[in-house]
Image (cartoon, rainbow, N blue to C red; front, side, top):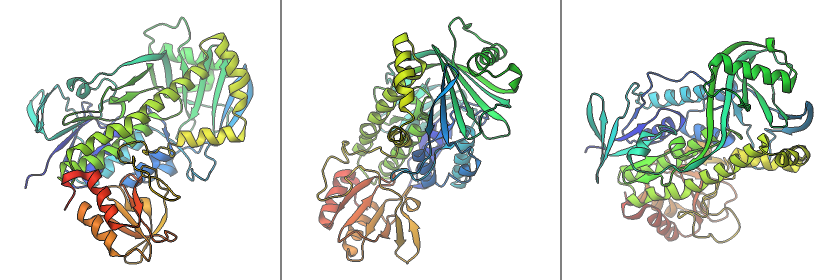
Length: 500
């Protein structure tokens, strides 16, 4: 039997995570990237708790928590005076692990290692030139010839060739005309567990600690009048001047420049995430402001949601319609992230005198309040994401407790042979069926009939006569007492291809 081949274009965090999820589920996958080799610059920095969960379920988290810079607070200065101390990473009932501040290159390295362990290596220097759509596959054209894939996943960034070839629109607007970034070695008189932001009128500069001795990221909107085509040297001169004027830090504070970048912040959202056998994820589907550290994490969420659904469809375990739920679940998440990060950017930058007065006198002081800090931290963690309103969560479940589509926390469980484990450790490519001592084998038989033998059956204390079916991405699929109702739910989710 010839297994279907999925080709993933783009070896960033999203593409690598899609490939890891597919390969772990037994789907043959190739990962192609036009670059000559792995990126070494930091680019995205923040790995929110949700992103860390996704990597953990893939088996790719590894030593990233130990490599990250622990951040305790964000200090905001207005006209040189510290006006707010926003504590981050504080445990709450929802968020039990900290966010991680590290280079995107480190995240990609752990994902490539995970993928290599599954027998897949990234194919570098493979630029996709064109795509030909078909009913039962996709034709791919390269400089050295043509190839075919059963499915194509575009994770190739904001200028995605896959998206353009699929004829999917990418409407949007600029949020800020230009933004300047630099990773530098500097001796700054601020704690290494602190992100510092200086605001003065229409000017702003932020300083983020990075892994490595005296390594920091500088980030600022390009000031009015700055040249359009700044050289790296000129860009650093602008940032040095801003450090001096806004933070009072002399020019010689910055010793070495590791990397610089200038880019425009846009807000864009693809009009569709799927066109037949072509799918989009990550920056190919949505781009937004880096404020709030949501970009890489939203892409990882796309990857996990898509991988388990595409694996089922590609291997004949579910009807093709399951893939339509990828867009209906994930596109609203991206739209909300675009709106919130755009609003945050406009608030921080303060593009009008009225907006700056509101920022300095209302919003910044509010950051000192414990309730505001908790709400911001829980929102940015992405652990509140729910798919209740999506097609897989449309039917309310009776009684108290989580609803279909809600994320489940990492519960303590026991495997059938008596070994203690954690719920999220058993997920990834697999579903999990949580049972209590009094829910017998009927639920297990139904789950395995629809999903195959790979379902993890786990005992959990306190379920009280009910069973719970958990999707591979840790969201609730069903809970109840009736095995027949479980079967009906799985038939609705998986369709005609649901019986193994």
